[in-house]
Amino acid sequence: MKRYLLALPLLALPIAACTPAEQNAAIGGLGGAAVGAAISSDSDRTKGAIAGAAVGVVASQLIGPAQQSGKCYYRDQYGQKYIANC
Image (cartoon, rainbow, N blue to C red):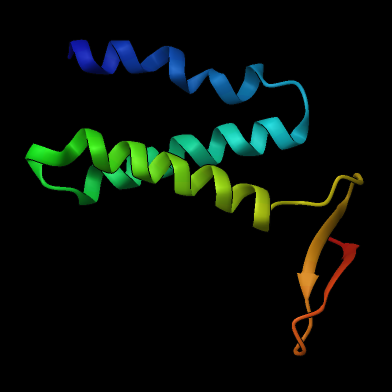
């Protein structure tokens, strides 16, 4: 139970971030850490959470929304990146 109480402040981190990019990075990091901890073995749970958080942050920045409001990045069948309405 103590572990869950210690994790509560981390859940408020995405709300405290200023820009959408920071919010996406925080959400990606928390999600990645949760997945990394869940799929790792009991002896390597911390390492799995750290690796998952790093992957989550990188993925959130590469796949996340564009800097313009209401726009998202997409890729066409040729691999070209373009921005369009979400």
